[in-house]
Length: 368
Image (cartoon, rainbow, N blue to C red):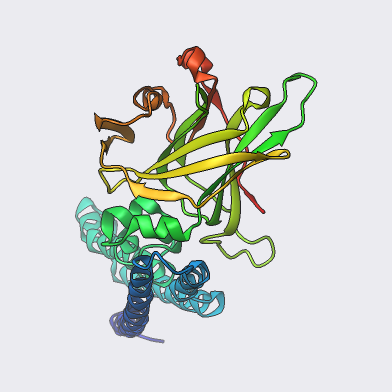
């Protein structure tokens, strides 16, 4: 039979050994994180370099870079689960040893002074839990604010506002690589809506998001459609592998509906994007002609930075500081924007642009 004091020393030595092994595990994890940061920075720099090339079609290269970034960002489930299990088991055994040591060391009745002596154990318990959370977040940093500031999640690489606000990157060139396009498709009439409508669709080869937008469609005489809102896409994990999806290709996003019968054979479309980290919007102009039940661009899209519009975003609200353009409904549009992630539109705004005329488009984004 062991003596009590001797047994307490044995328990403390075992717990000290476990804490030493836990420290070695943290060193191992830190080496993994260091190597991962280096690799991710290399991929990030490659993405930045590609963003300054507007002439070549680099859509496939950007798509592969973002997916490769995710591959290095998330460790495989097997090794990460093994490390997590070892950390949890070591902490559990260590705390058990401490509690047993204190139980054997206590003699007589428990007094308030005895409870005060237990405070170091409580503090060590809190520190160990924080240490556990730190290591687990280092292994799998998804949705973790501490590590996302060092290692942006793969989803951030499709965020136009993030790229424009934190990285010296050409947002205009990235948007051109996304191959933004506007399509107007005839939509069959419904019983409760007998009038034939046209569906306004934003098409992207790369699913960039996280920006405010404004779109106006007009002919020689009047504006047929005005749409505005905030685009924030959410993709569910893969149904089979359960892996997160950082970016998609060939995605269609409905922006609203207009009255098909009022449309001429030729339309002009202006589409403006307002990233968070910029002060001038990026504008796309389309000249569109009717082709059966569709309106399609008849020539190349014009993309430029509109220096006549100056804006800022405060408290998730877009405010125009200077507005000298031929977009008469732009100033009123964002004053009617309610929630951040809404896609609003107005049919026939020339009849009166009022809050009562604003409609919401709730269609989910679809892969073509």
